[in-house]
Length: 280
Length: 280
Image 1 (cartoon, rainbow over the protein chains, first blue to last red):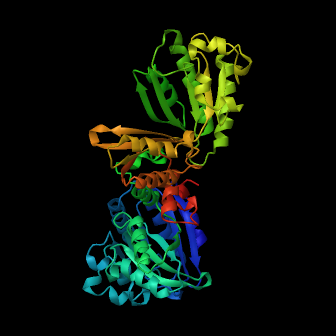
Image 2: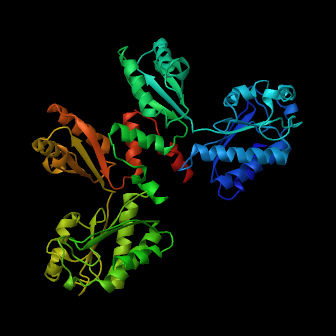
């Protein structure tokens, strides 16, 4: 199925497929593609068409929770687009998908219609198998499409969010409890930065520990501030940072603002970046 | 004349004019434009055509030293092009200019044919007025074109170099001798970093002093290393950095490598930058 979906997306003019990854135990694939609003909308509709035609969730199992054949579509702003632009696009696509495919659609994160629907896990609770019951309740009427599951494709979740940065920091110690304490200090759920999720874990083969983080909004909780906070917490135990790593992709703006911070470039404007100027 | 030149360049498909600046006391304009090799070559030839038709150096005065109507053309690598690519392009354009416009051409910096011609100031010494005499000497035979000046347009200098970064650091003191000492410590000419030119000056109206620098190769002498060196030298006098500034444009790679350095991102690859991936 996934090859068919990728082909359908590639056929849309102005869309660039950046990544395709499939996980057999999850029985689930993640497609990443980019383009301007109209192109990305056309690609998403093409994806729904292929997925609904070829996936039957009544015959589907896998470790990862899911609500529909196309489980979740997050629109992410890059290159001058804003989170608001993405939320507008998400609502537009949601209504088109609901109408065209008779599929119930929930809007989430920054496109959510109410606070209880911001969180994907809350929407997905009960999964495909519990969908018919969920859609009978007053709180879970869909944001678009019919209030009954699509027989084979279930429902879908569409929304807008900032690009996520997977950022890990390795510490020069084998004491995992220190990584766990630092993770607790910087993550939102236990009093830390608003847009940080973090856990501490051992890298046993390397004799180090890691503070493993997701930064969910690098504009409001920037990478440099989180790095400096982790560094300071580690110092309190007499421990240095060995190295850090970004897993996967990172928006250029997150690195430009980091350079600006450390170089104290107070009056710097993003359009001073030569490559940005090339595309204005 | 400058409007005609800009128009001629803009008319070349695939060329983007990034900046035009004219200095009346210099009686001289600087044009910055970008494109792939073929497009930029066509634009440079169009520029020579307009400049030779409209500028007569026999009637020209200005404060800035100059050798020709088109005085100097540096090709600068951006977005995946290398310095070698630019040197190859410089030699190609030099021969075309020499042949088509019967103009003597000197190659400089990374396109230079011999070490004595790397430095623009050495080539330009004697200026337009001294050109006929200079071209009779064995050491100053041109790299392309005839060994006699063009009557109205003189000669030209074409070459390849890294993008230059104008980087200033302001210090929390009004003692200009400290800025001068730090400038001397970091600049190449007095024992500092190979690709740094620097001077110290007073910002009298702000009660601060400035280490004003040109970084002529940010790959080999990176901006973060120069910043840290200036910071350390200032500390030796008990003085802090107030702010720094980049004047004009900076290649994204110079800021990405700065973020990488301060965040200790040891295994980071440039293709992890989302915007870079979009253009691969």
